[in-house]
Image 1 (tube, one colour):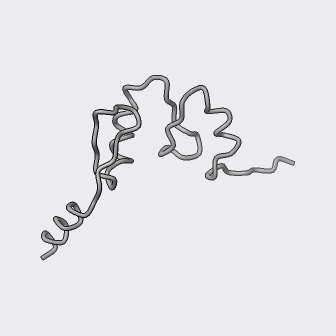
Image 2 (image 1 turned 90 degrees about the horizontal axis):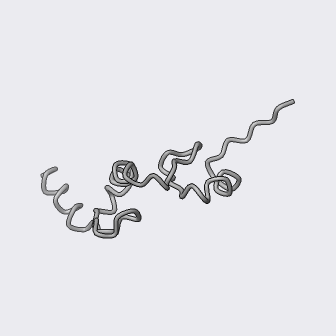
Length: 77
């Protein structure tokens, strides 16, 4: 029965388009994994230093760092 449950999850899962390669259609549940592999081929994209799941265009990384929800705030006294 667990196998049947896994099949139903896949059937209900929707496909989404890869943001780096428009010809890639990926299951939504696998998008983070796919992006981590696919963005290696995109030199204009860098990882957020606070969350590796955030792949940001190089031109926008400084702005992203200031507003990233995963940013760790450290007070230096």
